Length: 334
Image (cartoon, rainbow, N blue to C red; front, side, top):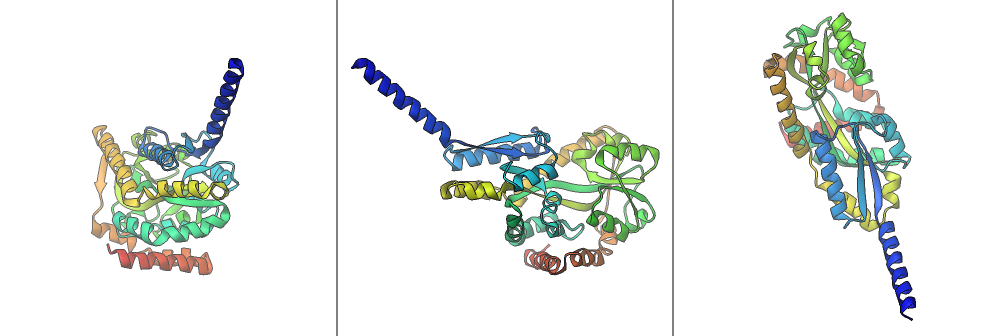
């Protein structure tokens, strides 16, 4: 009898362990970001929040440094339910629903604080509604960072880019933006930027500090002209198929974890990292040229027709998104 009781107890324990193992759902999270960066810290914070909110039923397994593929590739897999979570630029989101790319219109917002307010309070529901049918659940806003003009010369006003060759990643917004300012866009991938700059194929390259410094590109183009030509909204996303398969309890847990993030918070973390990059640049002999509000206005004054033209590309969808952004600016102030 003692042996029988022991076997019964062992069987019960084994069954309990099996149920416990089955109770934990692993969610793969794809990102191009390295772990020792603010983006890596945000990914890990989201993972901890999801585990906590779900009482351990959900476990996020991050894959950093593009281990699962490029962001466009992994977002496509996410939309099909093959990857559960990811951190993506809005540009990648536009591969699924092209009109959402308007939410990153260059030069549209007066300040990053204004942009944070508009994103959180006026654009979230729209982005979720447009990406959901494409298989992508928009979780919360993330941030790429501020784009500036890197070159071997000072560029402080719109007239300074007239006729210059600018290296760009090819998309409609990039191309038309620089044409509107009188520059000549040249398709250049990030991996080709150093060669293009060294050989004179381009005269300047717009990018973020987080590429400029770690890549060593600042040794070729030592001048940062801090005209903030672009702001880089990003997003944490989940597969809509995966979300729909979760229990209502676990769906709520994931949504609570996403709600723990806000645009201002993630922006400040990324911008603080940019400040460290600035220090590295200047301590290594690099130069930073500040662009005054008056000088920045020479760029921005040329942009309203560009915004309207980009919105018109998407017909009624574009008009609706542009109006949301305009109304958001008015409500949030500068």
